[in-house]
Image (cartoon, rainbow, N blue to C red; front, side, top):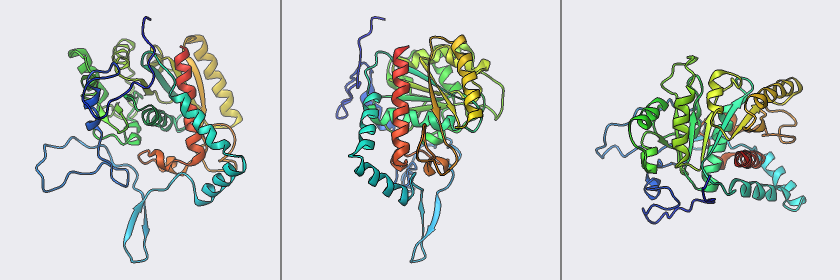
Length: 350
C-alpha cells in the first residue's frame, strides 16, 4: 500500500503543532469533557454566561445511594469486584508470582502493536442482549487509554443503541450529520473529522444513530458507509463499530464490506456455541478476508463467573452506567485487554 508503519502516533501534549501524520491533533485534547469524581461530565458554573448547550444524552442509570453515619446520602458507583473478589485476586496474584499482572502487561503490549493505516473493527452479537455494545465500548476505551491515539466509536446499529451513553459522550452526535458533513465538506485535518463527533475522553470520539427511532429498519448503505469509514481511517488509529445483533443481515453486510476484523459476541453455553459456529461459517464464506475474533461474555453472575474463557461477569458493566476503566474488576480488565489485543492483531492481518 506504500504506507509507512506507525506505532504510538506520538502526540506532543505541550504543543499544538501537528504530529504523527494527524494534522491539528494537538488542538483536540481540549475537546474532551471535564470529568468529576463520579465520572460524569462536570457542568459549567452557573454564574458564568455560556453559549446555548448542546442537547444532552438521556441520563445513565443512577448510581446507588448509600446513607452515611451523619445522615447525609452519598452517590457511589459499584466497582467491578466486591471486596472479597479483590482480596482473592491479590492473594492469587501473590501466590502465582504475579502471573495475573504479567498477563495484563502482555495484553497491553498487544494493544500497542504497530499499525499502518487506521484499523476498522466491527462488533456483532449472535443475539440481542449478549453485551455487544458493552464490548464495543470496552474496545474503544482500552484502545484510547493504552495507545493514547485518536479512536472513533460508531453506533451503527439498526436502532437507537446505548454506545454513546456507555462511552460517556459529552453531547449528542448523530451519525447522519457526520455522514452529510463528509459528503459536503472537505476533511483535511483531525479537527475536521471530529467536528460533528462527541468527545469521550482519552482521545476517544463517538457518533451514533440517536436520530433513528427504536427498531427502525433503516440499514446503512454500502457506498455511504464506505465513504465514511475510509475518511475516518485517515485520521483515526482505529474505528470501532457497534453493528448490533444481526450478523447475517443486509445491514451487517454493509459494515463488514470495509472491515478488517469482526468481533463476534456470544454468551457461554452449548446452545449458544452451536449458533456461534453457524454464524462463523456463514461469515467465512461471505467475507473470507475479514478476520474473526470471538468474545464470550458472562452477563449473569454465577459460581464460575471469575474463571473460564471470556469476559467474566462484572458488577460495574452490569450497572449499565458510563464505562469507567478504573472501576472494572481485575479479571475483567485483563480479559477485556486481551480481547482488545486479539482484535487489533486480527485487524492487522487483514
